[in-house]
Length: 170
Image (cartoon, rainbow, N blue to C red):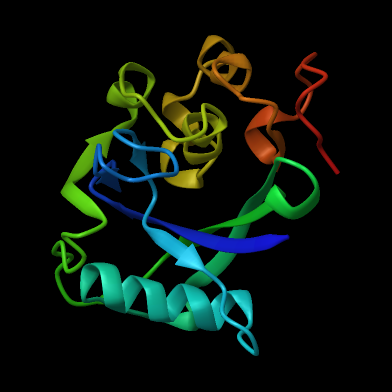
């Protein structure tokens, strides 16, 4: 199983997304939260701090990070566990320091999330569940959980109470 972490940096009503290069073997040409694989001996939080620095050049304030949810995709050797984290505070201005992985980064408003091709459709709902976006979220917005889920199961506050059998909520 592959263990991956991603981080949601939110500022002025927008979340920072990275665009995966069209030439990437896995999930090409889609938007995603920045992050990457957890290396042997690392905790998710340590990997998150390392990945945010490698990809964006920012240093996260570890005490400000909290787990937003967990995505589970695939099975067997191809199984992926994605820890999705909210990062409340960081030092530095995000820039694309991984141009071999991402061809763009952008601050995206909550109203724009539904119109973007995302690596996992449930990411929009997970981001909408952040307290910063709570007042802007409507029940109809949460239906993103069912769009293009590619067999992914999610544990997220935004998906609580949905009827989708592909969403798992603990």
